[in-house]
Length: 114
Length: 110
Image (cartoon, rainbow over all chains, first blue to last red; front, side, top):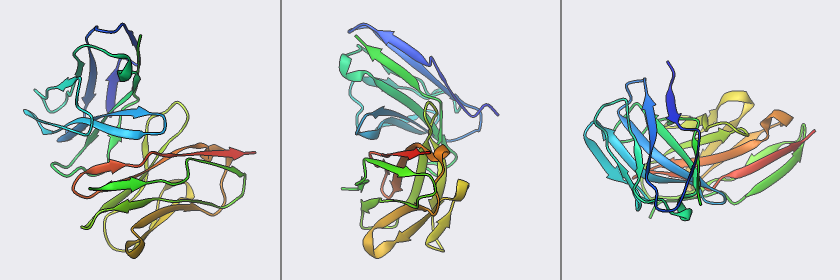
């Protein structure tokens, strides 16, 4: 098992550009989520999904979209990047839904918005 | 509202010292509790978790944590730290939702 994979590892964007952060898991987990990690603020939940076709907003959803067309994939879209979105983004998955059990984290994507 | 507090932002210890990192939460119902660790340049991984039963939970690498319901606490402990324990530690609470603390950076001096 590869676990949770994320691409790209690093990305630099200009303000206003859009892009998609990819996340995939091969553990047949129902629950998937996106977090951003900022210094002194820990991890904050952006969006989550309890299964294919079902998504919901987390703590900081503004400026981000998600979709879950398959169990394996959970891409995060930045619609119009802003410097405030400079952060490290982690995707995580968990076997259970709707209440997440142990989270398995991907390696992260470090995003810089200029 | 549910919240998690980690009061120690940065802890510096010498090797072989004992460690205790604080985690307090606010939530009136049943909770599941987690400690995650993030080594430099790596992603988060689970250290230990509490769901039910014995409130003293043992995890990997000699870590343990004790759930004290009356104090709404789930402090992480290790009797003797090593240089390789240098990392950031996150407490997380699953009540109505999964909430992470802001993390504690642990630096071990050889």
